[in-house]
Image 1 (cartoon, rainbow, N blue to C red):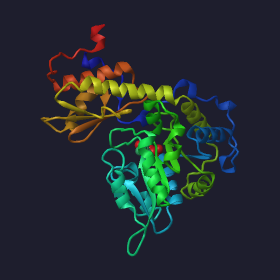
Image 2: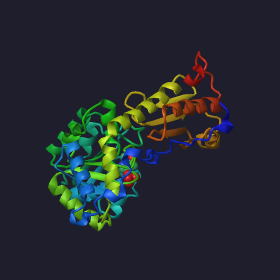
Image 3: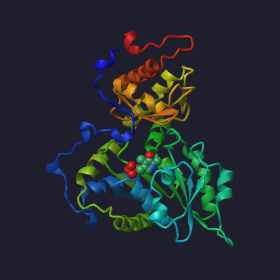
Image 4: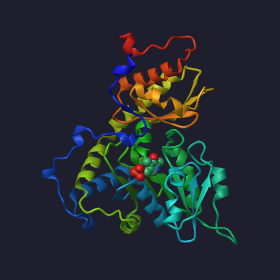
Length: 363
Ligand SMILES: *Cc1c(COP(=O)(O)O)cnc(C)c1O
């Protein structure tokens, strides 16, 4: 491949880079512009009802962002003076500015989530009944798929024992399911099979689903009514989000086909790079649309190779030792070959036994 003629930008920094497909684009004149604050926006109502049905819960509520929807869930669920248990590397704990504590007055108690999920015994240990000088646990938060753990997906049967433990202790569970639909696509299971894993679920519309913005909070009618009040408090009530809701609904209706492709492209990159001893590629088994490529014994920090990748049109996030590649609708199967080739050529690795040959070169 001639590095100089690579014009297409392959942006793997995040699946928020996904662009809407043509079928999602609205005919502006035909949309309903009822005001959602009065519950009168047809697109919003269709979207919320569709999502509630999809996830097997009675109600859903549209938010501008996933961060805001998570925050609203934490505020509604957690009684004043109680704590929320969160994963040590969860998005809520590590990437939301401590908003639950800063804005919600909720202390967060981090518990190890190394495998993308809590160990049941460690969680049981962490739950506090509030006796004597301890702070009572008022909420447990899960994350599936797990963003920081390379998109690891757990099936409902892995989450259910946690939910049962929480119920035994009368503690509600919130599931940050920003990419839960990637897990559904991976295991070919219905979204409502997660209904009995948590009291509330947040899903992002702005990632693999392909909408330009938005998130949904899904749960019991009562809970959603209260969340509506908190959404107003946070400045998240929108008057006429017709375009946003229309695009999100179209994206949701077609999530399986789209996210299966993203998951498959990610798996293909894992397959192409795994044979090289120079790369430690993760995850292999439970992966969805996120791939981490760790460098074994790099000469320089991984970040310093970023400009090299950009010559191939490949845009990645990196830290000292690893790259993160997130797959979305803007990345094709052909692009995967190109990404793999960039890795191989940049690090000029010796293939264990075979030469690296892209399928393009094979014809
Ligand atoms: C992206 C993400 C969020 C936040 O969603 P925004 O819409 O970007 O605010 C929350 N949790 C996880 C796990 C995410 O990946």
